[in-house]
Image (tube, rainbow, N blue to C red; front, side, top):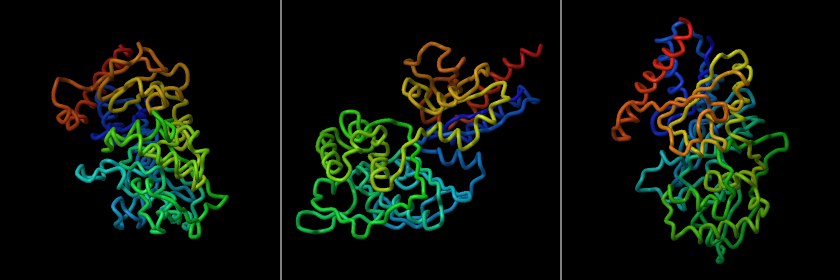
Length: 371
């Protein structure tokens, strides 16, 4: 029996690769003769690049860029030939920002633009960027700053490229800006389709979890809208431009990037279709499977790409009550790994054990078919 194990990460607990390995260990206890193919995946959120790196054996490197608080930091990216991948969360992810410093209007994303220029200098022709999981809400002006754009207030004083400055920008200078060469393709791996502004935009949808107060939403959203009315009004109509607190909009407007489906592009890069062609079973998973998962998240993306006739099973940290009845989206069964009622913190620590135990149980059921 060939089993393709293609889970996403379990947020705040295990990487996609760690999840896949735990499931394999459990299955092997019950089905020692099975062939398990590990294909950890991501949908553009945090952990996507790590999943692709493990599947393709990419080389990890670093570059010196401006950090979230204006200091210089080493940022990680992975590379193979003329292909490079990185995640904005490695620079400005929520997990990177101490709770007491979480002010999305002060976080700088300038380093993302700097890293793009560096990769172009290194000869990269294909650059893939995961844009989920950020602590910033700057509407993408940090990207422009990293590419050489400069912003000034009404007195001609240069402003720091962060969300707070959106309220004061009166003049934009392109004198020192760099353009992306026509032979370089930049693709944004996004797991959301939110627009840049409005009630479903970056600020209203994701601002609170980053530390923005609801009373600030209207002013911040209006300032971002006003900025793009002046520099790139087409961004206000672009699905997915709100990803990363507007980083996606900045990358599209100033670096000519293209937004693509995170999970579909990930599956393309790791040759999922070829690997699953002769599979007998596919296992997917994520920390919590809920109704939001149905709109482009990793488990559903994998299930939809699985050939008809190959069953798909989901193993997740928890299952939401708002899921439709099984089967749905090619998933024939879904399991929560939680074994008892306990604080979430304890469950996160024991996720590896719970994953293995659940996989053993599933393996034992599959083994019954042999008898």
